[in-house]
Length: 405
Image 1 (cartoon, rainbow, N blue to C red):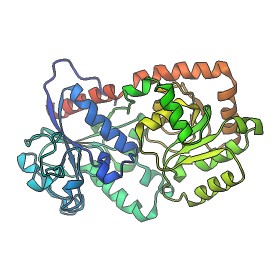
Image 2 (image 1 turned 30 degrees about the horizontal axis):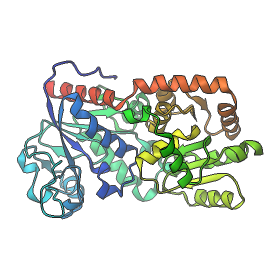
Image 3 (image 1 turned 90 degrees about the horizontal axis):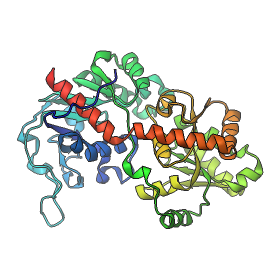
Image 4 (image 1 turned 30 degrees about the vertical axis):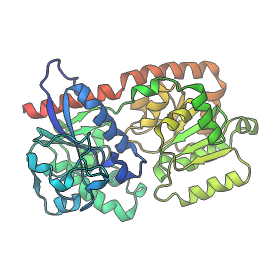
């Protein structure tokens, strides 16, 4: 079900927010979609009337890796295998979990010790707490589509997510599409699920300075107007068909517009990486940026794009679509899973299995000026509806609903 916004004058909620996926020392500075989500809630929940205490699962004895907040008193494997109930009191902030600067001083951004009213797990690391637990379950991919997940981790992720769904007092789904999967795959009672869409930050609506954008493009040897893809290279992202569709474009169009792929290599991406390398060796106009960690540079890459192309076979949400909308970039995306829900008619939607249709859509989005203008205007309107501020307000409303029951 959709959840209403937060009522004016609602009391503050002290929320322990899971930030494991957003900690630079644990992620290497490369945030996936869940990391972007966690970091956004950390920034925006205070404006929604929440006292946020960021908490992370750190490797044993390595609380020094944390810079956003404090370490939970046990590692995730230990807390999970033992099925222990972690305390909500000041004991939650154990001495070993207090981040320190190199000189030994406590980090100024670390929250003061104290109890929490509620714990929000933003990923699958969900444990029992001595307080209500809200869990965001982004999708049911390991169960619904096991062929797109690494066999090495599939059983573990299935087990963790099923147990997580059972432990949570309430579940947040990031799309209505995800609700169906959570009910069917995890057996979650739909009455315990609220839909709170992901969002986009205010910086994305402001065009970066032209000289900064141009410097980033020059650094990566890019010319404005390219086709842009953003996401980890893995089977469900369908980058193989995107590459085929691009190579099927008229030579004059390929010469004028690069295909720029931004994303690190993921599971089962070896063949795709070889195909990208082969295309580049043949002189095709393809660029791959595999280690981009600077969010400002990412904004510059959107600003220089002629179109975003996200032909995913499966998305629980699809944040790059919103980022492109806010950046004034038209979008070609899939007509499956959550993507039509996110784009709400503002993107050019295609069957992601139809390479020919993808080629045609890429051609139209850059050559049909009227279509481009409609998509850009509609995308901007859609992005204004789905901001991280709105996500935070609706998330805070979920907290209040859980605590009032």
